[in-house]
Image 1: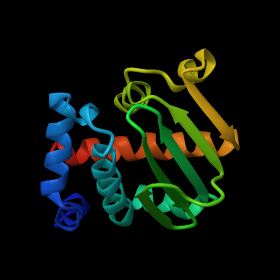
Image 2: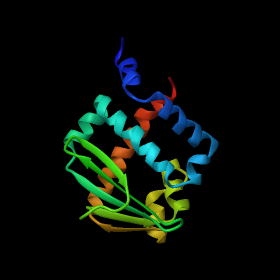
Image 3: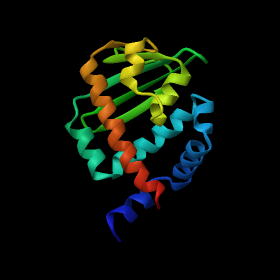
Length: 153
C-alpha cells in the first residue's frame, strides 16, 4: 500500500467528496458555515500528509480570527507547532484578524479573488501580524495542492 492509499484510508473520504461537490457546484460559496467542512478536511489531511505535518511542525503558531460581515459569521484557526485546530466563533488574542464580506472571502478561497488586491482595495481588512497572514496563506496553498490530490482519487 502506497502513502496516498494510506492517507485516503485515514481521511474521511465522504467529507472529501462532499467538499469537492460543494466546490465544483459553486455551493461551497453559498454558506460561510461550509468553510468549517473545508477546515475539518484540512485538519484531517494535516494529521496524515507528511508535507502538511512538516509545515505545521516548522511553523510558529498563529491564531487567526476571521470576521465575515454578511452574513455575520466568525471563525478562528490555530495552526503551527504541530497542531491544526479551528472553530466557529471568537478566539482570544489572535495573531491577526481578517475582516471582509463572504463574497470576498469565498472568492479568495476559490482563487477567483486575489487576496493582495482585496487588501489594497479595502475589501479585506487585516489587523495584526502580516507575516503570520503570509504564513497562513502558504499553509492554505500547500493544503490546497495536497487536497487536490485527494480529489483525483
